[in-house]
Image 1 (cartoon, rainbow, N blue to C red):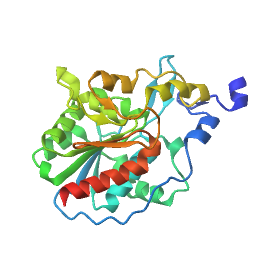
Image 2: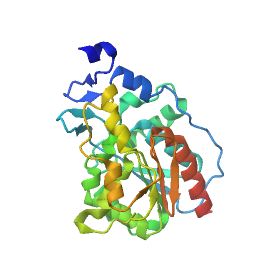
Image 3: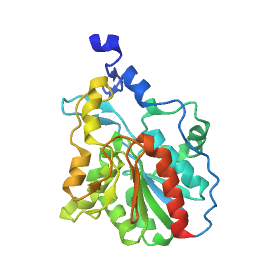
Length: 284
């Protein structure tokens, strides 16, 4: 009751999951983003496609058994897409089994016209995405049409995707064909899929920016999460040989070889700029 009075009690949803508290929403989200509408030189080459792998799962079970209402963070997905679109790239939207993309709609910046526009533009693709298995069957033979694979963040990126063999196969395909891989926040949870079947972690020794476990451990205090995370993503990646470059959930972005990463939702705009400029420089 005291937590409710203080506004730090997670909000119970109709399906029994919990979304962030009023205080957490106020502190952790915004109606408008810091998106910079940059006029990049348009890429006009063959490698114009970017595969975007979204989660199709909503609820994350915390250590205390409570479920967090999550999905992909809309800002972390749509701001990088806006920059890459402005630079001349297009997207193929996919989920593991072709079920609709799940967004953390409680984090949607409803007063941001640019985010609203790209969300509406790809809404039908979000509702009817490609299956990863179909992508493998039809697109693996032609890597020269693709520039990158992008895995947006949001805690939902840790649901199903790290255990999905198709995700691991696609990330290995991108790595072997010298394509870029882009991710941020909790999206690097997808990198764990490259170790399935006792395979070596393909990003061992890479520098990357990832959402800090230390922040995830603190957020239940303000009701952002309804309990402690099932596992620490940063520590797991470190144990596999990744070099995490950030300690805060800030605007840190990083590029190491063909891997482009960002630390948190706050890094979404910076990641978009870095990805757009890096791809344009490499491909033109």
